Length: 303
Image (cartoon, rainbow, N blue to C red; front, side):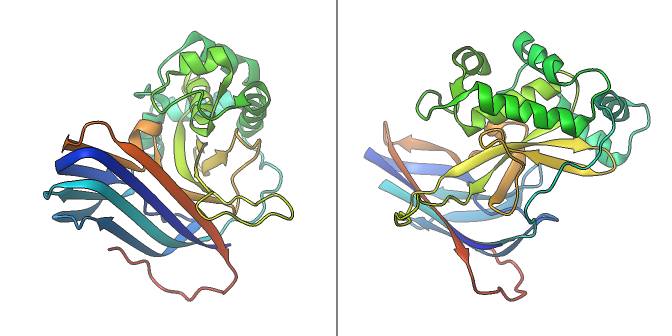
């Protein structure tokens, strides 16, 4: 599938901001299952400095500074992306989860496996919790194939937690999410990640987009799409496998990847500091539009 993505973030400040430093992760990832044909980043007012770089996790990231006074900031990222993944079929066979853990923690892992041990450790928003360990024990029973167990965990989260926007924020601790059994996509992904890490299995957070369809007979609303999040589990020798507990599914051609990290704190779309401005008002508009014209084999560009 071929998509055009437009993501616009607007900040309004009641008082002038005299200086801002920002990091944005809005350029789609380049992966085996995804190609970025083009990317354009526009910032108003015009930045004093813009610097693209790759962060620790391999995500395409942009840093910019604005040194002039302003009361409004607008960041617009426009991309064209091809997802190379078709509809997801049945899960491939996988070893028992205990064998996977032994391979991860063994004395002589491959270089890639050694690096991915990072994702077995606690992170800013996913810390050890007895409730998460109990959830893991419920689904990763002795001898159960890893991917089968992770799919069962994914379905359980979907059935056990209510999707309730506004009940959590990006800083809501997992304890609260577990107590209230409600949250949004980032919470559900982090519940799964925490449960898998409780058994020393490497799981990571994925930020991105999901193409949405309007109800039958209703027009598509401009700016009505939103960011999305899911998680991936690492299987040595095979790579990363994605799961989406919000939608009780595995990511396919409608899931578009922006960035990966240990949890949301590693991959917010926009992060920064400002001098002045006081409280701000934030609005975000996202459009994920399928394109029917076959794309040319154009290399990705960055601006």
